[in-house]
Image (cartoon, rainbow over the protein chains, first blue to last red):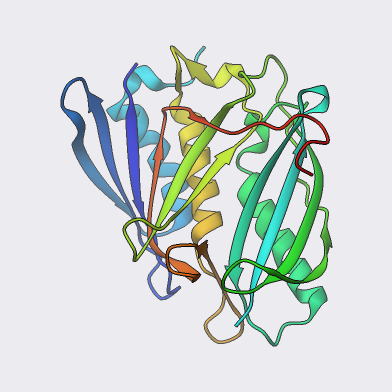
Length: 65
Length: 194
């Protein structure tokens, strides 16, 4: 298992609807290391896409079966 | 200038209770009925993604909406809300002090809104960390919590925090952080601190 962090950027003005997500993992003795960033055109797309991106980036953190 | 505070209390049966508090700047022309309706809708938007991960023993107990000033002092009680936000998950619950955690930044580096969502089921953690599925739900909840509501052309409802450092309400600035590392919450014994 990996300690992960998602830093979200979201619109507060209602003009733009783009959601951004930066994914980090926790590295021992180093701290948070940036793995990559994603952007989504709206909240609905982010709800679908973020889980897929998390699963592809951190497969060991998927829902237990 | 006045603001809204929403106190959401959850009962965890014989274990005690948990409280989440939210603040929002609102359109002062709105009626009390419109404020209560908006707050109820806001709470359901926040908790709906989380309910299936919250234990069925974590039940909504009360929701109170207050008008407060910039220092957080109560001006008046606007009313009560009863959103549909109780947990529905079966199985074991994580230890009571364990919670989903997130924070939202403001323009002031040391001023941020933090939230600990209670009653999470044990199924959703492995080796002490939350799984991706619940992180995704937490992201949805945070976007609902911290995103501006309403329409520019009609009503604007802006979430934020009452800052002791700034001595005023501070709106969120559009970035938030969630993590799969469980957070902790202060717990209360029944009838203590109420």
